[in-house]
Length: 365
Ligand code: FES
Image (cartoon, rainbow, N blue to C red; front, side):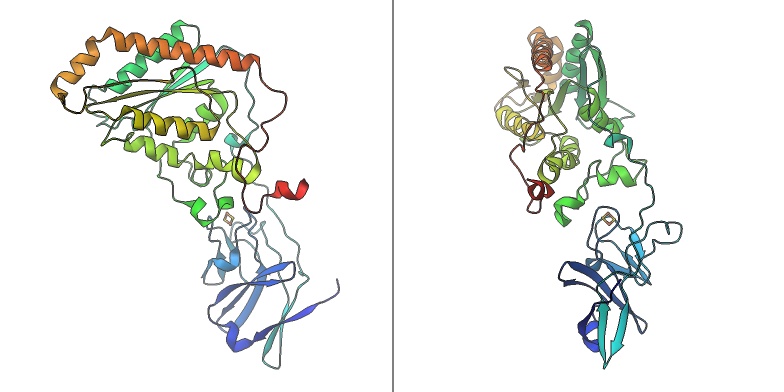
């Protein structure tokens, strides 16, 4: 291919910082300098397009700032063991102390086959009875479990779903080892991937089963939480921060992973603030794409001026009203799921309210 040399500037001005992004028309190049030698490769990482020129150097390898893949700063090859992945290399020359780059790459991009994560499969409801998952978010010493009012009522609800003919699953977040969200979205909306970047990189992370249940398996999701200082539990928040990747698919790919699914909630606490916690839960699950049955939560507290934790457990344990409330909640949720499953729209939901600045769908429209 014809060489198109472009002057990048005086060599002394290009040594520090040792790695930079240079935009030349449509070409964006990661230019580096180390131990007397310049290098130039495509700025776009093979993984999810991260900006290599904004990464950092590890000897002669560029570490991508998004998820840490490495590419040789001169040849573009992946790090040892991953050489099948290669980003394009650009030719350089020095004349009159100026560095020139040929903006037509001299090697092509090569992508090694990376089998997709099982969660990345198309979302399609399998035939069969309604499926109900209960997710308990209370925190406790797993070796010496205590009585949890929220988890107890969730168990009542899930047991009743089974009695009503549903397939059921019960997930205690407390039993799962999973990492907190590490903020890939804060680097770029496009760095927050589906499946979650952590899930893809860390096989030991156990939030996979929550994603599997929410995205692929369940028709109805019931989440239970205690109230801790006026808010849902810390484990609940740890889980939903990891759900950013689900909502983010709407933003960056115009893709709603959650459709035709119902969510409802069980909230218990020693003091009040039920409506505030319920408002948060409703808002968050609505943003994911869930719909709600009439009266989508049940709750219990002793009230702000009746902080009586010694009696709280026995109150819930003996309360037929709360237990029948839990059963009615799951019944309403299943009824709603049946209604929406009978009326599945043929077309996908069109851009449900969000878009990223550089949404590729805009180019196609
Ligand atoms: S490692 Fe570069 S985009 Fe993911």
